[in-house]
Length: 330
Ligand code: SF4
Image (cartoon, rainbow, N blue to C red):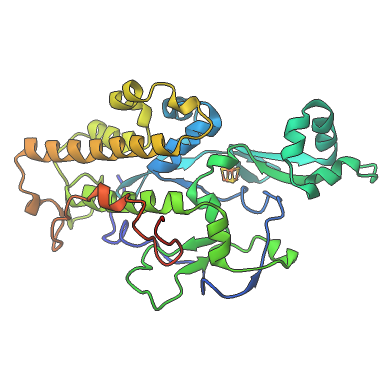
């Protein structure tokens, strides 16, 4: 059983280099995924999973069953991750990572012209290489259109406490990926905007609030002496957390949105599915607490007031600005 720390879901430990959002920096993506997709653990939010279904053509249940999504109790909370596969001799790469050499790219040009056309010009040029040898050119993402939030922000991360300290740098650089060598003038704000993060930050913030609520209602799995867990077996506790990352386990999703995961994208449908999943976990938690007969003041961390049930309509409202990076939707 994991040890719960009081701040587990309140604040991720900050490990990177604080950066001003609008400070000029040299950076561009080189398509060399061995910097960002190797030896990096990629955490998932429930929204990440809803989106991943579209790029894989699989339901969330299939992604879990075939081991592409894995779970782990961490600090009393269940976390979901993209699984990794062996890479070179001592490394691990994301399960969706694909590395291409110049000979691979020449073959794709002949066999799959549409795919070849989707490659950036610097990758396409490698098909005409006269070097005579084989060398790696690009590390590509097999789920690029619907890649998770953590991948979109790389090599930066929006600090989760940015709203509490608006006068401090709100972004940190969490990795040095090497593509600063490309010397394209940009800013952390622009990089994040270019990667469509506005679709991901509101769901991510909703997920943080839900984790706080679950902890407050005794749903964490912890042996911290300061933590008062809801009396509940490990199986239903695990299932409740795991279902946050498994929309296709919910009948309202499979009946209301049959085969929706087979579409390339469906942002409106994904938003509605996410609301169904998150409301279900909140309703189920409230029902379990009510059935237990334990007062909410006697659950969660000692000395902390019970959390309010998150208002999903407010948190997911597209007109809500996600400061400091994203302005409200017009
Ligand atoms: S999901 Fe895509 S971008 Fe993210 S680590 Fe995996 S291969 Fe890389």
